[in-house]
Image (cartoon, rainbow, N blue to C red):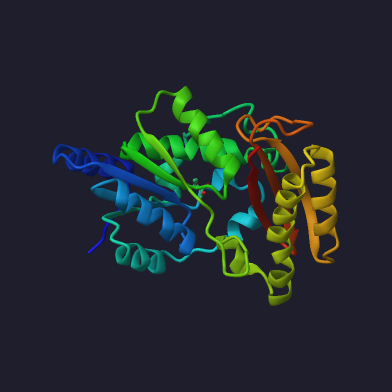
Length: 282
Ligand code: PAF
């Protein structure tokens, strides 16, 4: 049976016991509604440590819209069932008031990496992510923490945070898991209508096109950005938030691709905002 813990103090004590038994711990932070992408993270965690902790917490501080937080899918019993089937040892599912009691006032901010891309259109989002990930790392003290590469900017921020705050943890990124037709798995996909879902396939096609333009020898960012964006905008249901090409490590703007570059995009279909990305390797 999977063990369930809901309070930070109990989680800290249990993790200490596990370490005392000489076991290594892998942590997989999630907001629940587990899909195959999350299961890939759990399998990776199983491969890397003796004891796997799944965290499930829909973090209010990383939502910039109240309706988005309210509508975020939640399925704790389904999550626990799937986690148990994957061999997860413990699920840490704290309630909001255990993570943010009324007197709570601390925020962690990874300043520059949080500014571009999703940070520009979702103010405060990455401060919320950095804050909750810091709290989870402090409580569980894992040897390894596993995240999806689909949230590329988030992963870059977490890697920076861990270095800046001297956490003794290995951060592992797992490649994006896609449906057979290319749609990147996301808990948000469930909210797409059949028509929106079918149009959303343009995102993967546009990223593939960006790779093609690059491989054909066009290294100019403006040209890749304009062509990729135009392809998405031909889809009548797509509302582009951004399509950008930036340095893959610093996320800073670039004009020509001389180092690994990230093509990142965020596009809404109705109320559902999807993100996806690919890395261009010179
Ligand atoms: O990627 C997510 O699901 C969340 O942003 C995370 C890392 C669990 C923090 O709430």
